[in-house]
Image 1: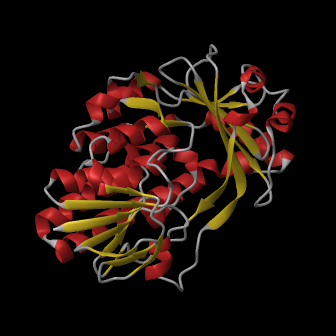
Image 2: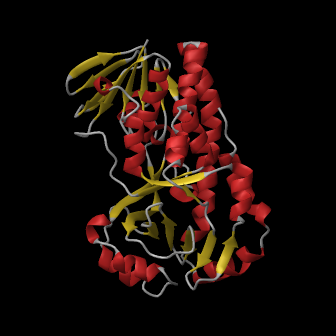
Image 3: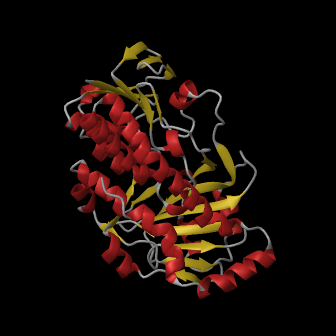
Length: 367
């Protein structure tokens, strides 16, 4: 049996590993000239690590250094709005790991035979019968997996009349700052903007910033420094220590709910199926879950029954996470002074079980 995977990012390579381990012939078509990841830090949460455990790779990632979950959310003045019990979260759900995105891609790529990787291949159209048209001609497989991101060619090929990604109203910057003392992983909310910092095992600090903005607008590091100059420490210092070339900016999109993740002999996964806001940090974790589940159902039940089982298992769960992620970040982007003042007064009064509603469904997944 042969599987063609369109897209060589985290979801695509994880799918390649999962099927290769089950004895399938694997072919990964990637548009970029090499298999790598342009990005910054990435936190793999307990459910994502369990997916990597299913691939035999979880312990290798843990060996690079464990991380703590989000310690909480602060106001721009530094007051705690939400304070998480970090020790309790780890006791209940398991380990967290923070890595550079490229390191995870390298780990996955090394578990796929080199001859299966086809960089520099631009996919133009995917047919439901398993034929993939690309810049080198056409390829055919028993199964095709679209793991080609939020602007997926696979998804557009199969469902050309469905709406595409929706800009959610804010843009995101990511960067890695030099080593700096920080109080764990913390997110800070302002009025229509926020800043998060996550310590990495090598001492560097992964930072992410989000702000309401028109789609396509671009802002450089100097303007970000000015924008966040009066926020609590260590935010100004982290931005002052960063370099312009380290800053990546991407508009934030969400994918409208698909009625199915399967068409004929083709399945979509990761951002191609359920692109979500980064508010719960679940994008890569859900792609890893998708990959492991798809390989398990198809290899266990057969192609068609397995594809339908994959859709039944993954679509309700991932679409729930999409909704929860949207809800989790909504209050951070309120632009009204009166609303943000009310938010900052009310959040510290809410019990922890109020926030568990968003976290527990994400963290408790098993294959």
